[in-house]
Length: 225
Image (cartoon, rainbow, N blue to C red):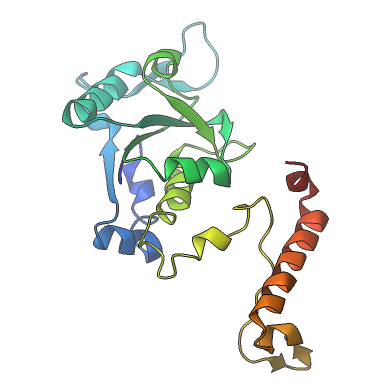
C-alpha cells in the first residue's frame, strides 16, 4: 500500500510514522508513506496556500490551486483508489471503514486546516470524506495519522501475530474482553482461573461472554447494529 498525505504542516506528521508498528511496516516494505508540503505546490510568489473567504467571516481558507497541482501531479504518476479529505463533517471512521480501506492499494489523504478548503476541492477532487470524531481539531494531520494507523495495522505481515487485528475491539461489533498477564496473583488480585486452566474451548467461551457483557455495559449501541 502507498499513502500520500497532503498537508500545510508536514512536521506534525514526522513522529507518528517514525516509531513502533508504523515504522516497522515501512521498514518491511509493507507500506509507503509520503508526506507532501502543500506550500511547495503554490504558484504565487509568497508561496501562500490560504486566503480570506468570499463573503467575509473569520478564518482563512485553503486555496484550490496548490491542492489541485499536488493531486494532479500524483495522479500523473499512478492511479489512486481514493482521495480522502479529513474533515469533521465526513463519514465517522469505524472499524468497518478501516477494514475496507485496508484492501486498497493507493491512497491520498488531504489534511484540512484553518476554516477548511475551498468547496471546489471537495466537489471535484475528493472521492471520500472521513471524520475521526464529532469534535474539531486545529487541522487534519492528526486525523490522517489516526486513519493511517487504523488501516496499516490491518495489512498482512504488519503485526507479528496476524490474528491480533482480527480480535480487536469493533471487528465483530463487540468490545474486546479483558486481558491479563503474569503474575497470576499480585497483592491478592488474581487472574480468573479459567484463563490458566488450559481448556481452550472454555477460555474462548469465557472471552466471548466477557466481550458481550462489556459491550452491553459500555457500548450497547453496538449491539443494535
